[in-house]
Image (cartoon, rainbow, N blue to C red):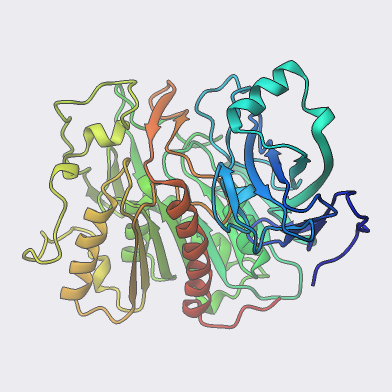
Length: 459
């Protein structure tokens, strides 16, 4: 039921929101009342997750009662159309006012809420017209209502603990839910982003997991870069083993349940190695991930796993809108088919770990990594091994950067920290199916972790 924190008066527009403060992966109900019946209005939402502004401009026609209910009303034009209750959040795109042409929507400070401002204007305005009116400073005379909605990435009472290589042996941020515990443990890693981003781990803590956002390069005590053209870089699996041990030794962690691992993109092969060699790893979620070491050697207890031999495509153009990885990866021209003979055996035989549950998520419009190829390859290996517990999720229309729910879609963005320069990477995907995939995949990932980390989550 809506919290009617604002009273309604006829032709005096008021914005009603079910939750002014909510977790960012929770939906909210929004209704605007007191409008002129059958009149078209413009909704403008905007937020600044870090240094860049993202915004949505969309048109709605009020019903015969002067109401726009985002849960029922159809958007007629703008960043999206049709009935999309959360469209004002996920359909935002970078503002033309940004200096950075290709920013990424990422909440870097999870201790503060993402403030989403929603404004209502009494006329029909397109995204392009909105920019002109902003420049001409004619918007204010049309604004009839506004509110701010706080979207949190860290639940009140959650403990946030910074870890360093010097003091703890690993670098990252640990999030412990409020309550007595013990809590199931999860490690999250990003791909080619230096250091770590915390928002996935902090959101998992709100679902009752002790979650460690783990960095493995680009942070103090760790290598500065990868994809280096001048140095050979070796990853040591012992570092990730130390992260598992640190988690399981924490007093708030349910150690007998083991550890879950969530990886994506470049860190995929690290996840496979952890599942292969570290017995405490009990479930693994791989999102648009590679299955082989890429660009770097991986070592463990005297063993060395060499990187896969990727070849430069003939049509690759550095610094173009084409992805660096798309240019390097030979599999885009020939994706592995499930009807083909079994794939070559791997040195990391993750499929033989029958006590590890696997979830592989593949975006079928991924323009960065051959996700479908790797998903098919992984599925075939698990089938041949008669593995008892795995899930393969495929999402048509989705691109590489599958985030938690309601985060905006990016076809491309600039990545810093790989080869010492900024790289423009193309991620692929179409906004609507991509964002629907994010919502579905996140729910299934959380449930998968609950199902496979043995004990019930204790809040």
